[in-house]
Structures are given as C-alpha cells and as structure tokens.
Image 1: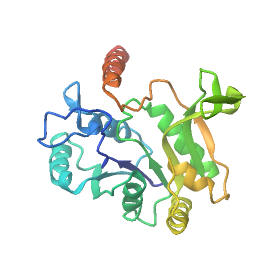
Image 2 (image 1 turned 45 degrees about the vertical axis):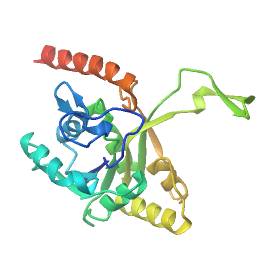
Image 3 (image 1 turned 180 degrees about the vertical axis):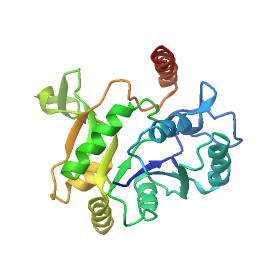
Length: 242
C-alpha cells in the first residue's frame, strides 16, 4: 500500500506575532524553533518514522522552497521529503500537492505543519482505518460543555458524546480526495478541513480515530510553552524506552 502525506506549510502564521530567527523575513509559526529545530522538522520526523508512509510532500511559499530544501537535506530528510509550491490558502496548497501525487498512490494523509506531537501509533491507526473504510480522521471528545449560540445568546446545549474536536492527520483514498477537491472548486466551496470537502460527496462515512490532548496545533505564543513541555516529556519517554 502506498501512502502519501501532504503537509501544507505555506501559511503566514499571523496569530503567532513573532518571527523565526533562522531565516530573515520569515514570520511563520512552522519555522519557529522548538528545542533548536523548526516545528516543521519535528512534525516531518513523526511521519518519517512511520512504516506505512511512502512519501511526504510539503507545500511551501515559493520564496521558501530553496531554503527548505537545504534545511531538509541538512536534517537528513531529503530522501523522504519533496516540496511543492503552495497557494494562498490551505485548501489551495493541499490541492497543489495533490496534483503531484502519482496515480498508483492508495491513500493520502493531510497533516498540519504545526502538530509535531502526533503519536506514531495514531498515524498507523488512522491509515489502517482509511484503508478499510475510505476516509478517516483523528479527533478528541471535548471535555468542556459545548453551547450553540446566536448573537451571544444560548440556543442549545450540545451532547458532548456526539461531538469531536477534529485534529490531523486526515486520511482518504486518493480518488475520493481528488473528487472532493474537484467538486469544491466547481462549487467555489471553501472548507475548514479536508474532511468537510469529502463529506459533501456523500459517498463514504468518515471514520474517527481517537487522538490525544497532546496533539496540539501550535498557533499562538502561549502554545510554545506547552510544546516545550510536551517535547521534554516525549524525549524523556524515549530515553526510558532505550
């Protein structure tokens, strides 16, 4: 089975509000340093370590392509990763990467560049689930009570057991994902994730694999403190296992 992973990394990361020190002019969160390495590198390493992953395609802004290629080479990742020019939106970046994937690919996984704490076991589970059912995503059950509101007035309390907070990776059959993007383009539909595009086709039911609270999306400065803690715990667990 051939599995390609798309990592859209062309975003500007305006919510982070600071710049990465290792490349002049970059202010994107995916390039910020976490324990000496860009967040993107930590993320890529998780998929490189997965035995199910065949290739990793990183969608980047055109001005970052050369620099990123040098970065991947210096980190020993160039044999596993290739780059493609991204678009102005996440959806366009994923679509650009999708167009470069070979027809012999079975599954395509899409993962946020700034989710470096995805567990390898979760990657394997969601790939297996998608292989069996055609589409699968990672999610967690909310711990807070969720309210539906309108103009700051509560309209309903939603049952938590029927809700999930979606994470990535999200994995789909190649043909299904291509069809979903084609329909979205025709309808001028912009989704908040890849699953929302696939759901519109009404061809398969999207399965959910439970993720973990540690699979955070680093989007604001305060997330970096939590990321440093999680990385320390991750490294400690790795040392103990050896």
